[in-house]
Image 1 (cartoon, rainbow, N blue to C red):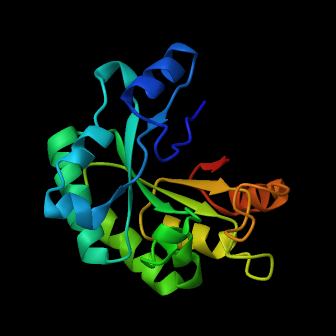
Image 2: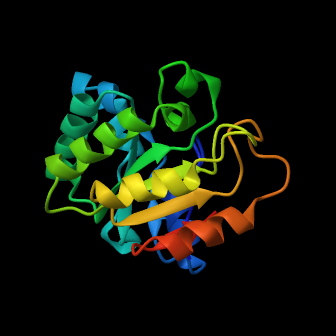
Length: 191
């Protein structure tokens, strides 16, 4: 139904193959907000898509609210995606060390500011949020983040059913996804 993006895999050709096999919604692999603002031309290739791939979202990551909003505006003006997706779920150390991705699950006030900045920067374009259930099993924050995302104007919440510490292994916590979906009025997608 919804193609989950993966860095270095989800290029325009891969997405086309997935669309041909029945994927409904597409999302680009993520791009760093600050790099878009700096004008890194290679990143425009990363977010390139065809009309046949719509509905199409562009996923961004970063930790500075102003930069995230500015990048969302630049991407929306140039690419006209169907939505902007904020990545608060990536567990990779190269992203975590920038205080981005799932690192933001440890700073919910900042996560709220980033979400609000992106929503305000592109009022004509839906904004979605991708998270994990929490940083580790002692800090499951999906419910709190769900409320924040919804109250700041996000229109969809996607939850990867593992913590940052689990990475891509271990058991998916479907129960948490169901509990968050029951609490919110916006759609919740389980990943």
